[in-house]
Image (cartoon, rainbow, N blue to C red):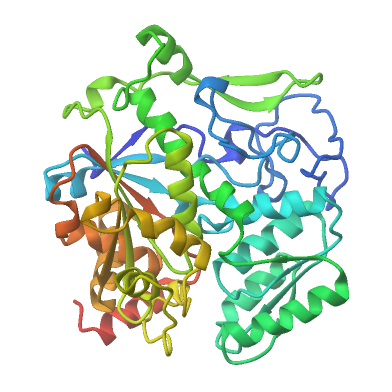
Length: 444
């Protein structure tokens, strides 16, 4: 048996199972922002990634789109329902059931496409004719992907520190790349000015409630898949109803808007795959930078009635603005970013996200938000170990969350229930860079 066991989520690749629509104009995909889409004449077996749409992947009762505005996502969303896998190595290590949510497999390379894709769809639906981002990282890539898909002019302003391969990747998505300043704050000021000139929509990397609503869909997907497994119970449903839902997936639309359903053999959804028989999520492990993903997870847990689930928010030393802020009871601004986990490099967390976290922080508040700070070396070791265990390459930012599990951190000691790890991904990494980090930290 391999080290990882697939469960519950057969819809990971829209190009394999089909898509909601087939576009009629080559190079000009139909919009997902409310304009009428062409009717498919048949179910496509292969659709280029740029033209791939995903409809909701489950029945309405187990819907995974959360509180996204139906008018905005009437024809689909830009993100995909990513696999949830049971990690045998992590489960063996902790002696607890550990599931990994693979948002590293999103088309843009990270979870960012969930929230930023939705924010872009909403902006275009509301009349914006251009998009602007100030992120040379995953937020910029998600914005460029969305703009390219929606056929909207997109500008991404990046600091001079942005790697050349990322600039090329942004350009390949038809984004106009503007290099300005030596840090994000300077690039952001330029992006604000350019956006005012273009009368478009400025897409913030992390401080946007619309993006948080998009990020919240990750919780809905996790809950949906764990219910299919029988890990989470569902009131008002018989086992037969659960099984029926677990064996079919909506992958497209009929001519008159009726969902197509792809029947998938129920070979990986047996309740026997959960021998521990846990009936709740014991903890949600994620990383945190400015706070957008953390906000989405907290929002999503509230939307599904699991607001009392502890969330472990991991940062690296030198990027730990949220942990320091919670410890001091006020938003703290770091003097600089000294960690290699640049994707976590927000000098200060979003004040609004901080306000969401503060009432959940500390023993008096059941420690529902638990900040954890790890070293750069720990994060890199976790990235390498995860690559060995699961054959997936992730950024040091994601490694911070993985390190919590691999180190058996004390924040998990009292967890009763399954542990879900958000593998947020990150496109700002390659084998050469990860190897260089390993050499730098003396990791063999």
